[in-house]
Amino acid sequence: MRARVTALTLSSLSLLPPAVLLPIVEIEKLGHHHKSSLLGGIGELFRAGEWGIGVIIFLFSVLFPAIKLLILLDLSFIQFLKSKQRSLAHRWMEWVGRWSMLDVLLLAILVMWIKLQGVVSFQFGPAIIAFALCVAFSLLAAMVLDPHALWEENV
Image (cartoon, rainbow, N blue to C red; front, side):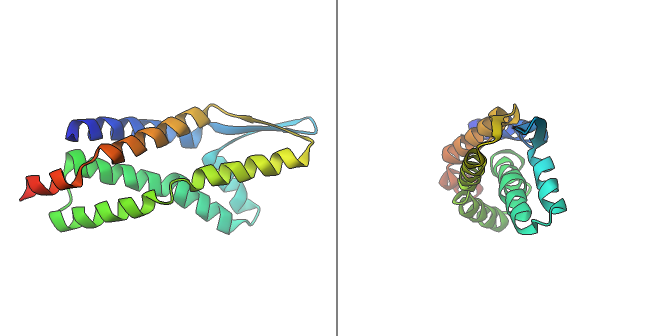
C-alpha cells in the first residue's frame, strides 16, 4: 500500500509544476492572442484588484493540492510527522479533499463566461493535461491510502 501511494503521490507532485506554470488557457479576442498559466492568471487577478478570487484560486489550485501531496508523501514514505501530528494531518487532508472539485467549478464558470461573450475564441493549453493528471493521481493516492494500516504499523 505504501509503495502505491508513494508512486501515485510522486507522479502527482511531478505534474504540479507544469500544471501551474505552463499555459492553461489560450484566449483570442478581437485579433489579440493571449496565453495564461495558472500562476500568471492569479497574478493578473491580483493586478486587476480581484484579490478575493485570486486568493481562492491560489489556495484551492496551488497551495492546498501541494500541501495535500506533501502530507500523502509523509504518510506513505517520509514519516517525518509524529503519530498525533500524522492523525491531524490526515484529517486535514480529508477535509481539504471535499473542496477538490472547486477547480472544476471555477473552470466551468470561466468557460461559460467566455462563451457567453461571443467574440472570444477559447482553447485549453498544455497545462490542462498536466493539471487533470495531477488531480487524478492525487485522488487515486488518497483512495489507495489505508489510514488504519498506517496507525496499526505505529502501534
